[in-house]
Image (cartoon, rainbow, N blue to C red; front, side, top):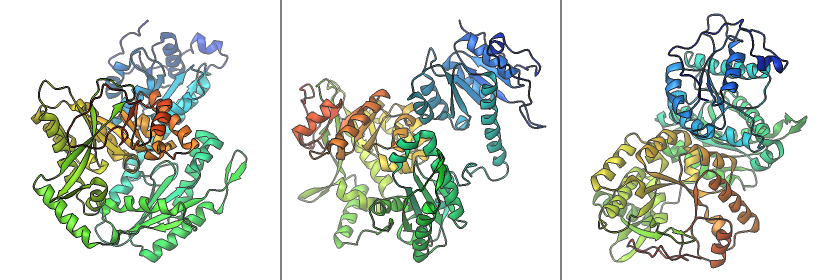
Length: 586
C-alpha cells in the first residue's frame, strides 16, 4: 500500500511522543533524547521504504527521539525529496518496487550536492555478501531487520553527528581534511599539485603490501581499520607535507620543497615508519609493509607527477629495498623525428585508424570494433599507439590526440551508407582529457554534426588511469552517461579498489587484462578471471577478452563465461569496418 503524499513542509515531531506498538513489543522503547547540540537544528532523516508498517515504525522511533522525518515509498521521489527536505541522512530499504537501493545510491552519489549525505540501508536480506556490495556502491552503513529502536537511534545519530561536523569544517577551512586520518582528500591534493608552479620538489606514492591477503584475513571493516591507522601514521610521518589516500591501499604525498636526496630519505622514513609499530586488530598486532616510489617535479609536469610516481611504484614492489624513483625514458634522436611527425599529423588531420572486431563468442548481429590509432610515415609501416602514446603523454599532447582520434572515429561512423547495419566503435581515451571542462559537450556536438547515435561509441579507459583519477572522472562519466555514450574499463585486473570502480562508474563493458587471456596464463589467473567475469555479470556488465591469439586460451575464456573475444585469433586489425559477425567464434 503506497504511503500518503509527503507533506510540503518537514513534519514537526513531539520529542515526548509515545513510541509505536511495534517498538514497545520489541521491549526496547526509546527514551526521548536530544539529538543536537544547543543552537543546532533538529536532525532530519529521509526514510525510503515501500512497506508502510516499516516506514511508520522508523518514523515513530526516530520522531520519539526528536528527529524530523519524511517518508517516501518509491525511488522516483528520492531526488526531489533530497532537494526539498535537505536531510542529514537517508534511511533506505534495499529492495524498492521501482529500483534497487544500490542503483538508487549510485544515482544519489552522482549528484555533487548529495555526494556526502550519509546513506544507511535497513533490510532483512540475510545474504552475507550483501554488506560488502552495499558499502562498495557508496552507502555508509548496513542495519539488519529487526532492529531495536535504541540501536536505530544510535546508528542514525552517530552518522548525522559526523556529517554535521564535516559541514562545520567547511566553514573553518578544514573541509579538505579527512576527519578520520587527518589527511587531505584526494582532489585537494591533486589541486595543490596542479597549482605548483616551480620545478622544485616531488611526489611520493606509498603502497601497503599484501592488501588482498589483509582483506581476506580481516574482512572489509578490518581492512579499512588498518588503512585508516596507516593513514594516521602517514600523517604523523609526513613532516608537514600534504598527503592523501590515493586509492584502496595507496597513499600519495606532495613535498614541494624537497630535492631528490630529500625525497629518497623521506621514502626510507615512510617505508620504515609504516612498518615500525604493529596495529592492534582482533586482539593481535599487525605490522604493515610498504613499497615507496617518488618522482621529481624537475622531471615531470604537474599533471604527470602522480602518474610518474605510480609508474615507479611498479618497480618498487619488486625492488630489494622496496623503494624506486621514476626514471624518464632515455632520449633518442628517433623520438624527435616521431614527435615532429605526430605534431604534423595533429595539425593536418593525419592520424589514421585500424579496426579489430570485438566478437560475441556465440555469434550474433552485433557489429563492433576496437578503433586502433595509427601514425603514417611516408612508405614505411604505420606507427602503432604503443610507439606514439608515451611520447604524446610526455609532451602534453594527449588531449589533442584524444579529440583527433574521436573525430576520425565519428567520421568513419558518419560516412557509412544509410542502409548498412549500425556499427559500434570502442575508442581508447585518456581520463584526464575526459575530465577537462567542455570535453563531453564537444563530443556531443561532434556526434550531432555527423548524425551518429551516441550508443555507437564506447570510450575505453585504462584501469590504472581510472584509479588515479577516479574522483575527477565521476562527474564527467555522469555527463557521458546522460549523453548516451558507453564506457569500458580496460586492462582490468582484480583488486578491491578496482572492484569498487565496477559498481561506482556507469560502465557497460569490462575489458580484461591480457594477463588473463594469454596462452600461458596460470590456473590461478584463469580462476581469478572467472571471478572477475562473474562479478561483472552480477553488475550487468559485459566482458571482453582481448589479445586472444591461442585457441586454447579462447576456449578457457569461453568456459569462464566471457561475452566477447578480440585478438588476432579472430582477425588482425584492418583499415576497413568489415567482418562477418554472425559466424560464432568458437
